[in-house]
Image (cartoon, rainbow, N blue to C red):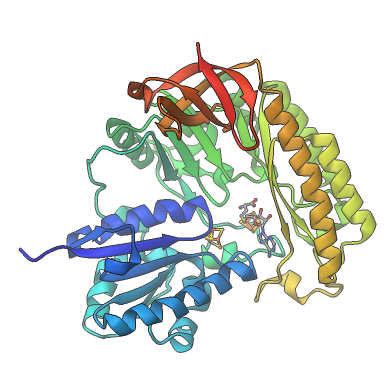
Length: 441
Ligand code: SAH
Ligand code: SF4
Ligand code: F3S
């Protein structure tokens, strides 16, 4: 048999892309590929891309520029672009960067082996369809090899919400939920391979409505409760959720399903009703605050995470102050905030009143200062508390392990190596800038 070919995948963007990259590598196994961690010895390089903001998309073109040089030394090297830039720009990528051999959109990864064969023969290999069939049904079975203690599992893809600023409904297509029976089987398989924590993924994960094994429709809470029955699966998380899909049984699960971790990423984007309306978020700031109150009533120690956009077209100083006020009211333990980036083809890009860059930068700085302060306070408040920590790997110091707490804080502690992959009880003794120090109980 000939030596395996080497595949290097570089992943940008959200966790969904991380999961997809794993599945793409597996899909190309039967074509003779094994993965490598460096582009230098690769026979094929795939960029799994993100289109969410202009910077993200531009990164891809600068990387392609660099890869062109690699190809000059190695003419057999194949370069592919997958993910959301592939979907959004399609054939334009081949025109703009002729060194690219293959372009594949997120819903067509099951067609990769065929596209790869075409690219090898020097034929055009472009597929940005939204096929009828579900890619996950058609992808090769997953390998049985042991793996690390945490894994992602995509349960739902696509988005029907059409927030005015966002490209995702165009790059990932309409909402599709995978059948629960397949997800249960995949989760059982992951646990058998050493996984103790699964994060369920979806662009709108709480809009999940898959067919249950009983033929009925299952929501996310039902799926979580069923997955919680798997022996050896210690922890369940999910991301990203939309406030309008936070149904009662999901809120209740935060209170009564011990394997569901006390962490919730629930983006609000803005605290101004005017801006929320223009964004097409379909809820008000007060409704969001009331929702958070209900979730915290179910799980008082919940750590809340959010996303914010500043400088949305038409955002006034007062609108921005409303966002600051909402942040003060809610209190976030983790947050991501962005300057609005106009995306081609989205309604917001056509709106009047684009906010000057300096104004947006100034707002971003103020918002981030507030969020950083809240994040630090939440982390510092863990000192003295007892938490579960899933140890993932050795730490920097001798005898140390690092892992994540229930609330997703990074924790390091002196602990025996055989605790890797296990959840241990730890008392937090110190709060460092980006992690906590703990002692085994
Ligand atoms: N499905 C998720 C978000 C996916 S995108 C949700 O609805 O919350 C992740 C984050 O990127 C968004 O929450 C938003 O804060 C940010 N984002 C999306 N489009 C953007 C744009 N055009 N400019 C700036 N930030 C954007
Ligand atoms: Fe984008 Fe809105 Fe859908 Fe989230 S809910 S993916 S922000 S359109
Ligand atoms: Fe980016 Fe696509 Fe994810 S645009 S954030 S990679 S869904």
